[in-house]
Amino acid sequence: MPTLTLDQAQAALRGALQAARSHQFRPMAIVVVDAAGTVITAAREDGATALRMTIATGKACAAIGMGANTRLLAKKASEMPAFFGSIATSSSHPFIPQTGAMLVLDASGNVLGAIGASGGTGDEDELIVTAGIDSAGLAAR
Image (cartoon, rainbow, N blue to C red; front, side, top):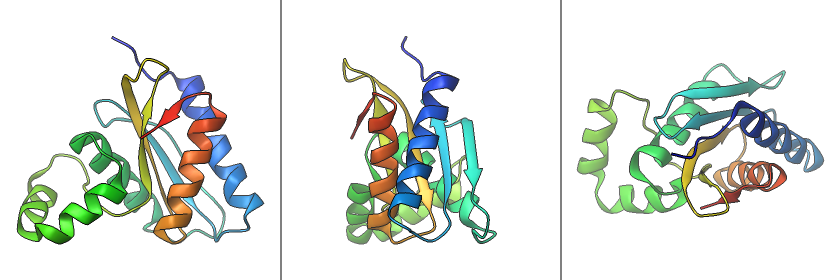
């Protein structure tokens, strides 16, 4: 079974941080999880507020847990708030279905994990995680 390596996760994290700085976004937190939702690597930039790591983790775990990027999950959550609320309260992982996390795939389309960000708008968070995944030579969904 393909897995997300520490080197790949760290490359994605570095790429996301680089994208955040190149766009001059507010300070970010970025979390990379494996296919089981376990954190592989994470970083919180100087000046990022206290809850940013929790939010980034919740976004990444929501993506991996539901098998979809959080832009899609946010749309579905708005259509089914009771269902998504019950997942958030019963999940063993943090679960935040808000834009800013993408699935990480290998060249064959296997889901290896997810990366989530918090600190900017949802669009900014999504942009940097996608850039990070690309910079690691992996695919985003």
